[in-house]
Image (cartoon, rainbow, N blue to C red; front, side, top):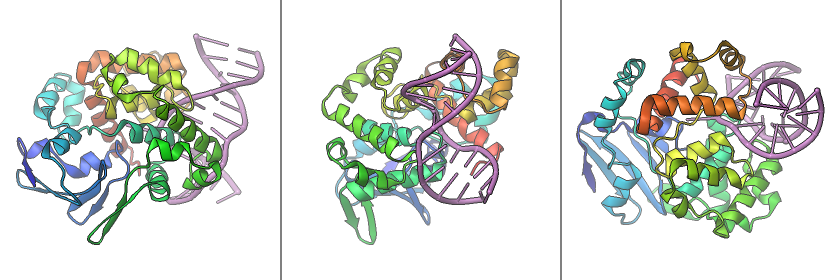
Length: 300
DNA sequence: CCCCAGGCACATT
DNA sequence: AATGTGCATGGG
């Protein structure tokens, strides 16, 4: 199968899969390999086409949904470019798309992301999949489905904590507790998806077990269609200081430069700034700024 | 050996 | 409401 792209700037696979939004995709020569639902995909760009090979049939509409091809990237970037600081950034980053990920996998991914390097996040999620997910083999490629909430909820803490979590059994327990809450439908992603951004964020944060401001905003942006979400991590905070220093007081700026943790109020101040500044596509701006700042400061 | 990484929960002030 | 601390892995 192949999907015709709007133009050459509407998709860059390297940027989209290595910018730190999704964690289990891998590059093999000229293509990217990973899972969508229980299907193993091999993706390749060729001129204006996205070529898709899959371990079993997958509908084109599902791939379009995953890549958010319903978002007109050219129009979104054009709107964001009215901000002159952003225009400079976006001029060097073409074809970075937000993905529409599975909310359950996305939530666990960002639980694992806390205070952790991206390389280690990748590994934790691959450990989880390899140890608890269903194996998929296709030719000489092997991958694993992300384990269901049910499987994780019934796992033993000792086995779960073999997945090399940043905070060991404490974090394994968080993952398992969240799995139980998802199984019980106390957290129903389809319902959260229908809520407004503020309502949805309150709902996610009410769960606890490691879901704070940052984790909630990432899940809302990357899997629950809340494109106005503007997650603030250390990189975004530093980028905002660099780009818009005149907008913040010197105490906050100093705190960010010293790499001290932000209070909930300070988080909200920065996230609200992003939203007010960039509007309903603030999340796209966030991801471009995140990638730009990391590249600039030589993050690995 | 040192450092610190897409934070959060909880105790203390 | 702000600040401090435990969490406890593993790569550079």
